[in-house]
Length: 270
Image (cartoon, rainbow, N blue to C red; front, side, top):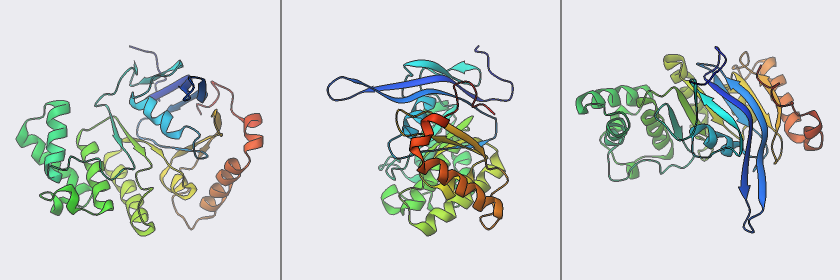
C-alpha cells in the first residue's frame, strides 16, 4: 500500500510526462504536476489547447506512464488501467455498435467485474434511468443522437461503480442546448451518487458550473498555474460565478505570465 493523505482519493506527485516527436526527440507535455483530489469531489482540469489536459487524465486512468513522479489512487500507485477508474471520452462512438444500449452496459459489468447476468441487467436499467434513457435500452448505438450516446457512455461507466469517473470533454462535440442539459444532469447524477469526478474541458463556463475546484494548466510544457475553488458558484447568474469565470479567463489568456506565476511542485494540493 502507498501512503496517501487521508482526505485524498487521487494523489499526483511531481509527475512529468514525456512524448517523443517524429524525429525521436523528447517533448515534455506535463512537468512537475502535484495535486490531490478528494473523495466525492468534482475536480476540473482546464488549459490552452494542446497543453496536456487529456494526457494528464490518461495518466490517472493508467493508459500512460509518467517519466517521473507517481500517481496514487486509493492507496495504490497507478501502473495500468483498472475498474476503479472509468473513462468517458468525447467521441460519440464509444459503445459497441453490435450490442444494444442495455447490452453494452451488461457486457461491461460482466467483463470487468464478473457480475451475474440478472444482476447486471437490473443494475443497467437502474443507471439508464439515472441518465434518463431507459426507454432506449433495446436500441442500438446507431439509432441514438449524440447526446443519448453520451448518456449511455456515462451510464455504462457508472454501472461499473468506479471510485473515480474520468471525463475527457464528454460534452465538447454537442450542440449548446444538449450540452447545457447534460451539464445539469451530470450535477444531478453527482448529487445522487457522490462519485469522484475528474473532468477535462475547454469551457470556462463548464469548469465553474461543474467543478468544486478547477486546476489551470499553462501552455506546454504544462505546469500548474493555479487551483481555484469554485464550489460556491454553481448558479450561473450569481456574482461569484461571473467573478470566478473572469479569474479563470485571466489565468488562461496571460501565458507569458503563467510560467513565472506557476505553483511550485508540492504546493498545489490545497
